[in-house]
Amino acid sequence: MAEIWLTLFASPWQNSAWFLLVAWLLTMVLYVRHPSLRRTVLVWLFWLVLAAIIACLPFVPNSALAEIRQYVLPFIAGLVVIRLLGLVFFRLFLPLFNLRPPRILQDILVTLVFVIWGMYQLRQAGLDLSQIVVTSTVLTAMLAFAMQDTIGNVLAGLTLQWDASIEAGDWIKVDDVVGKVVDVTWRATYMETRNGETVVLPNSMLTRNRFLILGKRQGKPLMWRRWVYFDVSLETLPTQIISMVEIALLQGMLANVAESPAPQCILMEADKGVGRFALRYWLTDLMHDDATDSLVRTAIDAALRRNGRRFSPPQYNLLLSFDNKKYSEVRHKRHTEERLAVLRGLELLAPLNEVELLALSDRLKFTPFVRGETVLAQGAEVEWLYILIKGEMEQALATPDGVLHPLGTLTAGSFFGEIALMTGDRFPIQITAMGNAECYRLDRATFQGLLLVRQELAEAFSLVLARRQAQYHQLISEHAKTALPAPQPREMLSRLRDLFGLPD
Image (tube, rainbow, N blue to C red):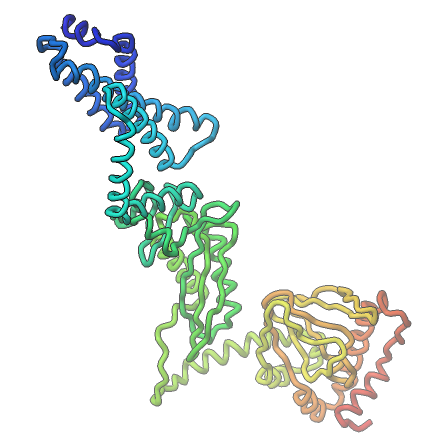
């Protein structure tokens, strides 16, 4: 073996022998970290076997073996060394400075050095390079014509990596296929789907057609907004469905569901008594899209069931219907108790007995409002008494200079509109819903019928109206430029009698 190695290194390039041995050892070390060097290792083994075979044969200076020894072995060894230097430079050295040029650009530069090394070896062998250049030009033109698609894919791959359109790790959607990019090579882009499939996409296809990069936004973390649809009967107020679903998702802390931006429920459409809702959330792990959608649906279903609701089945209009009298009675009784509890808490209706309150409860009209909606505008004519049962309302005063001054917040149990309703005045301020709010309301005709039966209620109402108007004056006086007269119960009583046609 000693003679073989001595013979192997006894050549015009013997000064590089130990360098080549070190290069071979470096190849084996790097192979552990970069399995892609498998082909380089195989070339090294081929070189060693070929060199060993030549070394074992008798040395004849002018034989073909001598020419192989002088030109072929250095050529193969040079290719391996160039490959190693390219790997060390692009994969180990440049990343230290946070520089990662496109993979195809690396391959092109290494290939260019390969060509220069090959031309040098041909020159050393005594060949005329000018003839080679002319011949290679013709061959290049023929190959370019025959390999248009391949060259197009190579250039497209270089473009994709040069402008960083897609990178390994990106999730993309091409037509109806969704997957994760694992590699961009000279010819194609390799994409792995969630079903364990590897899709090979020609690079030219990506540059010629539109594709989506999922979850990738400028300066934002990787998140993808998903839509989960569900149907609920419109017997329930849509604002209630939206509120209960959003609260459930925020409190649930579901896996792969981003806390910010928060999940949002919206009403998409309403048809045939059914509301079509969508829950929009941001998915943080794109690998688990379907599983997270399922988790979100079950969370929505649980929230609805906790509040006595369910997903709505398909609705059909039938000519034949059955009236469940017992169910209707139970439902009416429950609603009546809820309304009576609201009416009993109103200062204005304190003089009424249970029979009168029960009659009023049947006249209450359920009136919902959404965020930002104006319930009563300043200066509006009022035909209803409003009772706030859920949510909050903002009171504000608009002064002639165009400034809107906040006057406080109304909460559940408050009522408003009674002064303008019973005196005929214009409403002095503006009431706006601060969020989703629910009210009951009573019309003027209801109060008129009540006063015609019990005229003595007019005096009790006038006392409450005077106190309420004093409270409004106190709110407004801070922003009004003129002093407001103090309200008098007698004046209120007179105006109430005139409006409702009551005798003195």
